[in-house]
Image 1 (cartoon, rainbow, N blue to C red):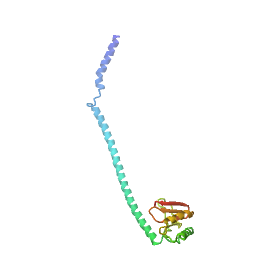
Image 2 (tube, helix red, strand yellow):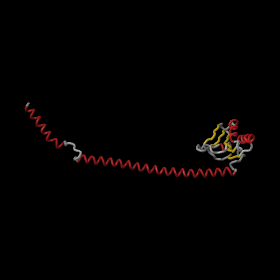
Image 3 (cartoon, one colour):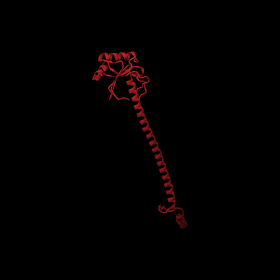
Image 4 (cartoon, rainbow, N blue to C red):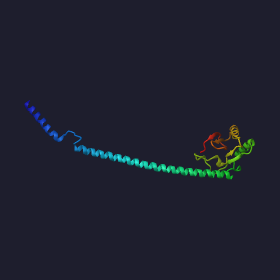
Length: 198
């Protein structure tokens, strides 16, 4: 037994002597290995942060560029829209878009019924070749001579609209908010009052 005790004591002593060389205590303030690790970690963190900042800068530049592009197209769109409105007003006032002869027989008959009941109306628009419904791209009834925009006789717009709702079942009746004219067309029956103009 004493041999075993002596062997165990020697083993423990050798272990204690060898420990300071192989396994040091972890001293975060004085360990050069820790500083080296911290430097690598810090560099990796800074590199990752710099990458994130670069991505942020790039995405911000893209955002700014797209915003500028959108505002240019909006300005361009507004300019085009005002040109289109001027052209439409010029077109409507020139009489070329107010012809009664271009209307289909059903549209002419409807206009005749309206004028028989309320007297002569002021035509705002009839046939507009190539006209499309704003915001949809679908062909307008104006393109095929099946629609009429007109101003009712003075002070009788509400009366005309009520009469159309009650008597015009072979097409649509529409009024627009902020505008004085009435739209009627031949085709699917609908009524839309004070709709927003596209």
